[in-house]
Image 1 (cartoon, helix red, strand yellow):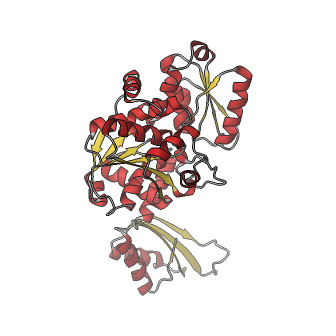
Image 2 (cartoon, rainbow, N blue to C red; image 1 turned 135 degrees about the horizontal axis):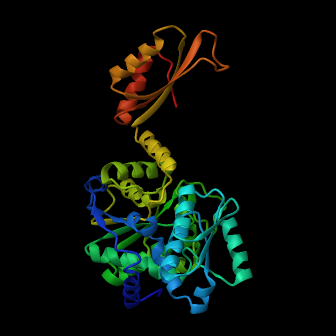
Length: 403
């Protein structure tokens, strides 16, 4: 057992002024899509923009006085870095965080603003962790692991306790899953508080899903490659501590695609008015993908974080609109004669598409001297409308190349 209910409540009391209780919001839009009542646990509104401060604070609070005096280390590309920095500031501990050189600038700046020293090194989290380990061996400072420690699991479990108190009738909880610290903590907390009648489901990105095979084999199995925009849960090897809890208590792991994540982010922004990062939205993607299979509600979805680079958010939302059939780019080649651009735009106007940008090119090496390429980006009203726009352009004689 990673913790008892009494230990969990003590941890929650310790976190009361550090990681405030986040709201649970009912979502009518998601309820209609999933077929059962859906509530969103808005941990994207937590201090530091994610749930990570819970585990980081619980871990550092239990360090010895000598360990606190020496300071702590961490390796992270974002959320864990900010959680460690905030927790260290609350406890008066010096923190150094190793981050990949490619870490998003807003996350680096936020980590520094919370008082931690940041060192950019290497291309990946593994590279950053390697440097943190060397630092620890040289200085004796403690590395605060993002998920593989009993104190971390207990700290994350306070989120599950809040869910049990806020929606005591909950039947299913969807938890974004990387290394598994949050999934283990929430699943154990919910079962301690509400018994065995609640299903807790882990959700991973299909391109970074280490848990299914690890659960099948009963031991952590590292992934050889990972490809996903959900960097917050792109963890190649489950933690030993959380895996043991997940094996006992979690019914299944659901996998979602990049397109499903994009559409989930779009829905959260449009209908729930919430900014969430890709890893934080995988539970919403799974809820939509599983529409019709949820036997009864309520369904609680954990939104684990909202730390997303604005430029990435723009690209992801556009991708989500495209996946949902609400954004279309077409390229046509026409004779370079006056009026051809106006004619194309008139045809598009007649279809009801909303033109966003137009690019007019005469310089491609594949163009004849009397030809021009016109690329048009437009908003459409859905997949059917998108197909209608393409079909009507083709009927008008345009050789359409959807992009």
